[in-house]
Length: 225
Image 1 (tube, one colour):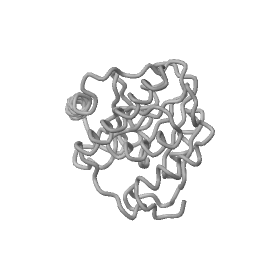
Image 2 (cartoon, one colour):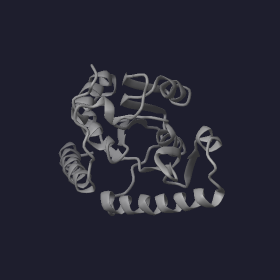
Image 3 (tube, helix red, strand yellow):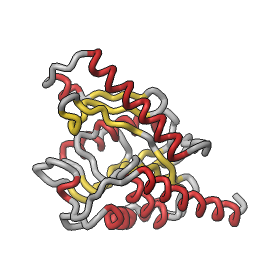
């Protein structure tokens, strides 16, 4: 795929082509990192004909420079910190804890908004494909990987449209496979490499998931699984 990427949907379609070997397998599940990863992941799940769910993760933005990740959190009390960012800052433990508390509240809010009472999928002995619309530092994806690994899957794959080369190398050291379409340098932000990169709203995520899960329910009922 050439840069700039047209939009998240196009990114998902191209990633799906690169992931064809995982298609129509009973053990595969695609997990999207909301919000931006959802439209990318839906294209992949549709093309591979496998289930879709979420991996809820929140970036811990550095106070005063919130776009810079000093770490990330995920469900199951998973917390990953970016020591390189922390060493270059003067942020104390109290400030970090305030950010963590705020983001854990947002994590709970999103879980209720997106999933309601829907049970979480069992990831044990499954092949998990983690999807986002791009990665910068990798802190958020690392938290997602830790949360997935705690559930003992057989394989973890990270599928992303783009990321910096050093982040891709880091991820290759902690998962079974990384599928990344582009590794541009210098890498300033994810949005700069897209032609169309609007913010994905909660309502859009809820609508996309509702439609996809309704389709999966009919699919399961029809197959008798």
